[in-house]
Amino acid sequence: MTQEQTWKIAALYRFVEIAEPVDMQKTIKEYCLEFGICGTILIAPEGINGTIAGHPESLPQIVEILEDLLEINKGEVKYAEADHKPFRHMKVRLKKEIVTMRQPDVDPTTSVGTYVEPKDWNALINDPDLIMLDTRNDYETAIGMFKGATDPDTKVFTAFADYVEKNLDPKKHKKVAMYCTGGIRCEKASSYMLTQGFEEVYHLKGGILKYLEDVPEEESLWEGSCFLFDRRVGVAHGLKESAHLLCYGCRYPLDPEDTNLDSYEKGVSCKHCIDTLTPEKARAFRMRHQQFQKLADEHI
Image (cartoon, rainbow, N blue to C red):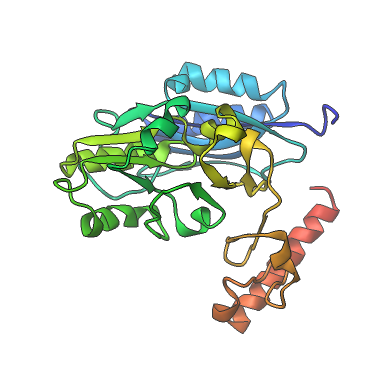
């Protein structure tokens, strides 16, 4: 793999008060463009969240700048590599929340559950008195989960609180553990559950990605791949890129054999969305796919 082909990726977040989000957005975007960084960063009054990529000599420089601005190493920063550009552009967006939950009483800067290191996770989740929750959405859990985990089957994270209200009872469920991709959703989910009276609330520090990086495959209780929100689609143990593809019609992950089905049309549809695809949407998706293909052919 040559230097020109190598991209280093950083997934990062930190819950921290940002007094002037607009100014922070402008500053961070200018630095990212200066260093040739691609990806997406979200800025909100409650903190920063994003996944970015750059060449090996550039990414450490932008991470150092973010450390100076927001001390991101007090949150989570995880690294990976790709042999192709993972994102098309650089976006720095302003949001009301860096992970949307719409629960005004939740404040991860003041109260969260107990962090559990990856090396201690197996022992925790083997406790028969514990309920383990996957806080991700249905299209993410479709390609991988921890053995024995409960899937809330949510389509958006804002539905997690509704699931808890309808299905869990702090008097009955005394011990709850949860996990997500990189840890950020669990910060909010655990904070929410503490506000609802749950006393023993645990979450996997660094999320699935850190677990797959640190825990040997022969000791792992993870089954499948971990869904990602970039062109890699999914990773397995050791953060090796999985063979999964993405349907750009519905954003659902696919196994390679799914592309052989009649329901699959690249950039348009798959077995998960073909039944709800209207002719109008199909035409729009085909046009979009043609535009993307043209850009790819021109090496943009």
